[in-house]
Amino acid sequence: MIKKYILAHDLGTSGNKASIYDDAGNLVANTFYGYSTIYPKTGWVEQNPFDWWEAVKYSTKDLLVNSNIKKEEIACIVFSGQMMSCLPVDKNCIPLCNSIIWADQRSVDQANQLKNILEREVIYRITGHRCSPNYSLTKIMWLRDNKRDIYNEAYKFLHVKDFIVSKLTGVFVTDFSDASGMNLLNIKELSWSSILIEASKIDPNKLPDLHSSIDVVGEVSSSASKEIDLLPGTPVIIGGGDGSCAAVGAGVINEGSAYNYIGSSSWIGITSCKPIFDKDMSTFNWVHLDSKKYCPTGTMQAAGGSYSWLKDNLCPLETKIANEISISPYKLMDLEAELANVGADRLIYLPYLLGERSPYWNSNARGAFIGLAQNHTRNHIIRSVLEGITFNLKIILEVFENHLNIDSIKIIGGGAKGQIWRQIMADIYDKTILVPQFLDEATSLGAAIAGGIGIGFFKNFEIVDNIIKIVDKINPIPANSEKYKEIFPIFKECYSVLVPMFDKLAYV
Image (cartoon, rainbow, N blue to C red; front, side, top):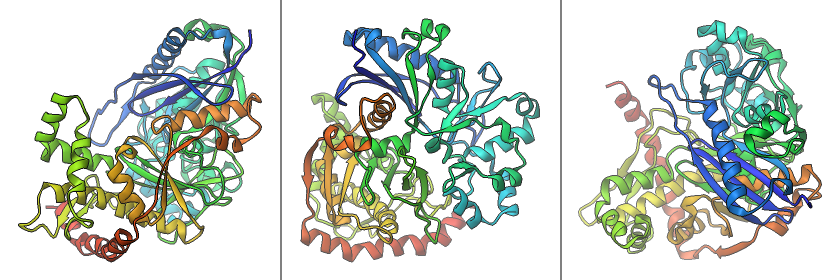
């Protein structure tokens, strides 16, 4: 039987999206299996790794049954995964505790220890990232300092996808893209940084072996095949971290190409041939799935999250009507936003409901409506939220434009479905917006492309030009762009003048 299908698992924060692609990169079937997140204490965020394993097992079986594809036709299995986790496992890949995931903040003291040993810019220049408790290194240090028995017993510290790969194959590996989210990888040399290892005093033997994202790292073992219902010997490709997979799945593989993911959080990412180091350290760098390249990225905290907050708190009527006529309430909100003038009649929204990562890295920052007047209606408020999110993303975009020429931006994610938001992005960025056919599958598609290259279905990453179809193109409206150019510096100044107030509010 001809093996012609790629099985890709995208292990996100809320669940696993599993997809099957054929040998031409076409999406054949997909499914989703959710799992929960655990919050043991304030600032602690964990997941049970056995939930990931159950999700992969169930999703694989569900896909094969509902697509009528036989396991004998699966050519390989490949992974994308949420990044910056810390899961200690023993030599048999048995977890020693829950995984500490990316959102966890318990290791602030360890981050401060590192910053007292190494200057912040030194860490940034080596790893491509600020020193932060979000990353894996300080979480490993926290376990060493607070759960010494677990640290000592740990054979390896793994990420989400790497745990599944180990369950399938028995090997303990990661790829360069996921490793670049640990604050431990020298991103220029693509090796574990001896400087960071010495400064943190962790055991380098507890780190997984490094691989390219397209490497076949093993095969499905006989024991694993019985659980996951795949043939023993099925090739396993390591894949990559979800940020780098999303870039490939959006078709962003050549230097200067860019994409904008709009979900609860949002980021702008580009492809470059070398890391981009911003003087304010406002952006960071992943290693691309093509390990000769990089994915400079800037992530803001509350993008779609701001629009969701608006829906939940200020748009109950839209939600009620939408439920009655079986459409998304966001469609009604988008229609209302279209009724307001460009610039929302001088109403500005600061989208810092959860503090902010890029561009300000200020946990004290807060959301605000500025300029609210009696003439403003809900239409203005809705439009100002979309504009405020996009203004903030434009600051990130400007960092990259200082280094590379960017002509157009591809958009992916659930927030990319709204036509009015697409136009606002085109106008504020003053760029052409390109809309791929599939907005929600970019991450699993990126992993599938890595898998396809790994087993020889595809020659290289240039295959994205054949696979990814652009279904809509939105050009900026010159008059709108000019208006937004007047408002943009005011938006930035609104944040600057409120920083002292944010700091005071944090300690009231």
